[in-house]
Length: 380
Image 1: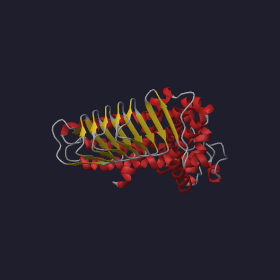
Image 2: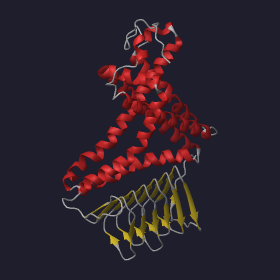
Image 3: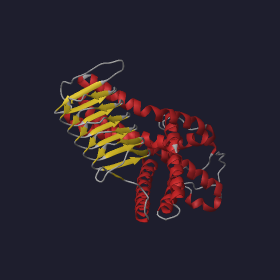
Image 4: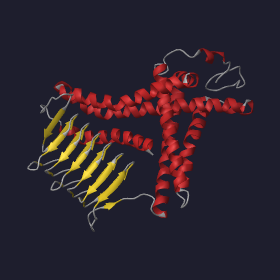
C-alpha cells in the first residue's frame, strides 16, 4: 500500500503541477517580483494571485490574498484569508484556527492539516487529510492517502467521498475504469500502428534492446523517471528567473508533460512489440500468417492491458472488489515498469537511431511481414 501511495502521489504531483501552472500562465507579468534564498526560488504576484516555486510560504493572520495561491515545491502555512483557491504541489498545507479559504483547496504529494474554514472542496492526492475541528463546507476527497477527523463533525461541515461503499458506486467505478482502459488501449494501439508504419526500423531496434538488455534498460528508465519532475520544476524556475525566458513558459509548461507522456507511450509500445514477438515465437510456425509487427504490438498491448480489464470487471461485482483493486494495482505497476523499460531502451538506442543488436541480424525473415516465420532467430 505504501508503494501504491507513492506511485499515485508521484503521478498526482506531476499532473497537478501542470494544471496549476496552466491556470496561472496567462497572468505572468513582464516584470516579476523575485526572491532568492538558499535554493533557487521564484515568486510571482499579479492581480491578487500569488505563485511561489521552491520555498515554504506563510500567510500571516492579518494578511488577505485577494486571488488564488499556488505553492510548488514547498509548504504553506495559512493564518490569514485567501479569497480564491489554494493549491499546494509537493508540500504540506496547514490551515490554522481562524484562517479561511473562500474557494477550494488541493494538496498533491503532501498532507492537509485543517483547523480553519474552507468554503469549497478539500482534495488531497497521495497524502493525508487531518481535520482538527476544522470546517469544510464542500466535499472532502482523498485519493491514494488517508483521512482522519479529530473531534465531532457536525452536519454541513463536510462530506467525505468514499469509494466503493455501495454496489452502485462500485459498479460505476468499475465501468468508468473499464472505459478508461479501453480508451488507453485504443490510444496505445494507434501509437503503435503509427510507429510501425512511419518508423518501423527504429521501433524494431528499441524492441530488440528491450529483449536483449532488459535490466539495463529498466535501471536507466527508472533513473530517468525519478528525474522528470525535478527537471520540470528546475526548468520552470530557470525560465522565470531569466526575464527573457518568461514567454517560453507558455510553451514549456504544457509541452514538457506532453513529451513525457508521449515518451512513456512509445516505451510501452516498444515493450508490447517485444512481448508480442516473443509470444509469436513461442507459438511456433502454426500462426505464421499473423507474424508481423502490427500483430506483435496489438498482441503485446492486449496482454499488458488484460489485467486492468479483468480488475475493472471484478470491481463491478459486490464481493470481489478487493481482488479487483489488487489486480488493478498490479496491472498499473506493470504498465509503469513497461514504460520505464521502454524509455530506457530508447535512451540506449538513441530512440532507435543506433545500430541493431548483433543477435537480431541472424534472423532471415522480414520484421514487418514475416514470410518465413520459422527463421533461425535466437531471440531471448
